Image (cartoon, rainbow, N blue to C red; front, side, top):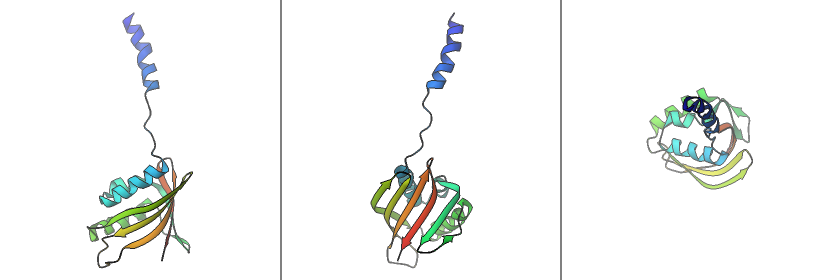
Length: 134
């Protein structure tokens, strides 16, 4: 009797177990900044879609994809040990996160880079980014 009861309960409990939650768009973007600041390239890359699209405004698309991101940020993290990003303001709209960001610690550049970045996040991954800077 106990054996047959456990055969019924175990599958029911497994089916009722919570599934891993996908981060919200805002949490995904925040986690991306945390991984950027930690210079954790692999953790940083897990937050981007393989077919990531990146755009600079005004302008056209720039070479993108997770492989290109790995190449760019792997070099940046090594060359800029004090690299640090922060977000001053944030607007949320559905799958979009719009942030005013500051980046400090760039080698050979004392000034802080300020930019507005628009992220589109789907299923916990950044799929598109638009950057606007002076």
